[in-house]
Length: 265
Image (cartoon, rainbow, N blue to C red):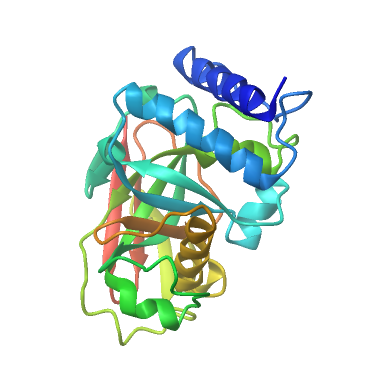
């Protein structure tokens, strides 16, 4: 079987698993991509099937496995990217139904909106040089659907090929006056049913959330793509994933940027 045929077969299998609500399992055997590059080709093919099934258009990208807490949960050592669909973008305060997901997890993030196209030949970017491409910042939840994965048997490639488990996002209010914030040390806090549960700093994602934006810009450039004006980028979770129950209300506050909230039913 050619690599292209194997990649198509794996994408078909993953799409069928989603349609049939089958549990996630680590990729093994002859269809497992040999490299991360091949895994992204499978992700592309899977996303073509999602778009054809009505999820499109693309709203932006998520970057996952950015914090040490999340990497430890998933037995991974590197970031991964996935596609966000416009049909899965919610606004705060959001009312979410657990039945819409196989196994919903919340991640606590900074989202940014891209101000202008990032030229594919811009060269390597970092947290400082990518600032010019960022229009607004927002507190946000990423909605992870791990399809009841066994967290003792995971790897980054398997998660990434499955569109990095992106089930959507919830966005707080957009703030254009973010330039004075030190996003390495800016405080964040997560509350459950009105009570503070955990705190951290925005720099817990990649050392600085804009490093995630620079990283995904480089990844897309390597694939012959680019970040476009208006795209939303989820920069990675600062805290460990929480798996909500019906009746719970979560809030995630980013100092200087407000808060995002969601209730579960």
